[in-house]
Length: 155
Image 1 (cartoon, rainbow, N blue to C red):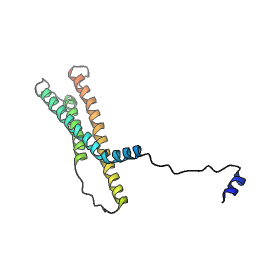
Image 2 (image 1 turned 180 degrees about the vertical axis):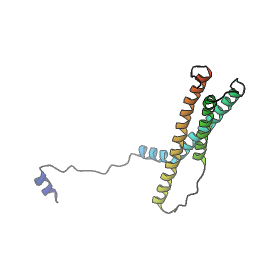
Image 3 (image 1 turned 60 degrees about the vertical axis):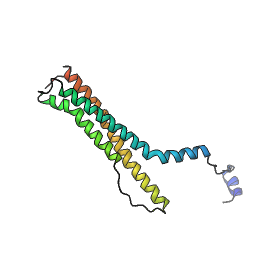
């Protein structure tokens, strides 16, 4: 169709479109975000490793010097739940940091993009799982503290 047919056929004028010139600031910002995305996820994983390690150490020492060593039944599970969840969170955080071998065609931008997106997808999934388990561990810790204080009954 020509412009005359569009104008006469539809009764509307064609709106001219101009290709947008990329704003140098936002282009540089996008390059920075993509370039630093893997290191940002890995830095978060490192922080999770440190936090879970500290929490496990403090909690273990709190249990070791408390009077709950002789706990029985569900009480043992209540007191062990935070430790198990911290261990799981730690495992997933370490999985973010582990390296995987990727076969990549260095001359293919599409292959590079696909491998990058695959790496980010896996690392982001593991860090989200680690974070979710870490949040669950705080819930378990609150339950353990409430149980220790006698607020949550033992069955």
